Amino acid sequence: MLVAKVGLDGHDVGARVVARGLLDAGMEVIYTGLRRTPEQVVRAALEEDVDVIGVSILSGAHLAHLLKIRRLLDEQGAADIRLIAGGVIPQEDIPSLEQAGVSRVFLSGTPISEIADYVAAQAARKVS
Image 1 (cartoon, rainbow, N blue to C red):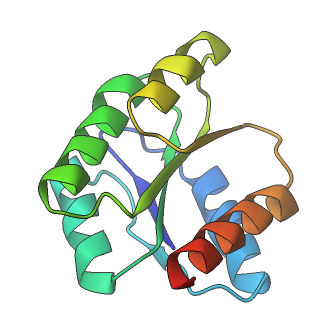
Image 2 (image 1 turned 30 degrees about the vertical axis):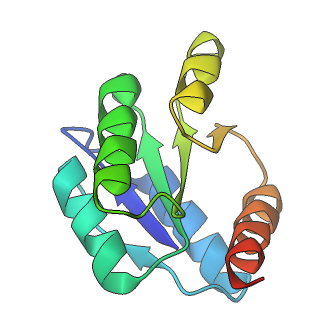
């Protein structure tokens, strides 16, 4: 699992809490740190051979960043890497994100256990 912060969004408490919760759930987690570009996120995901990329967004730039990451993954032949998002994302944007290939959006306040269960199911799907 790769947890990423993209763009100028400098608020990473939520991303770090999720990353720690996933570690505590027994997952291998790579955290990219702040202010990464979509290209850096995709490169790291390919180098680390992750099953899932989770992007934490609070800046309002979720549509642009997530759609670009999905497009770059597809162009690199990595359509099997699941892209999920969390943070402050308006509910009315979720259908557009899902239609564009974001597999799941977790809104603020989602229990870590729910995120961990989803990520574990995606990893198991890839192994089967």
